[in-house]
Image (cartoon, rainbow, N blue to C red; front, side, top):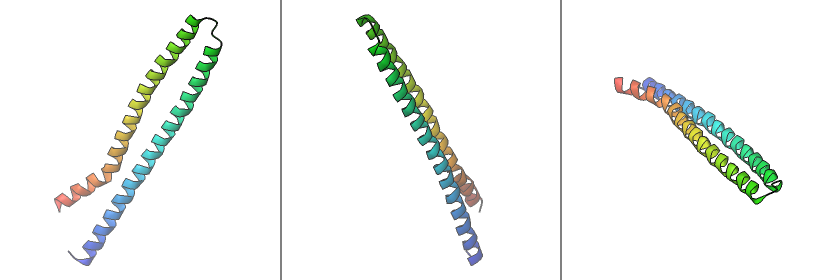
Length: 109
């Protein structure tokens, strides 16, 4: 391998790594925002449920409020877990893309 080829290879490798790092950063930010939004909504829903529970006039109404809250909390959690799973898959795909192109070039050489 000549010096020029070695320099070109080093430059390509660095560009690939930086592109991948950019994808990781972007994906991690999206995940962090999603988790923060979910946490905020979860706290708001919990506070609202406590208010409804405190205002319940009968034990039956209190049980209904609690049951509704638990059901919606579970459904929201499952939806959020699914969404986060998709974000992690997207992150992995985007971070791998630059290497995929580099591996294809290397295998042709």
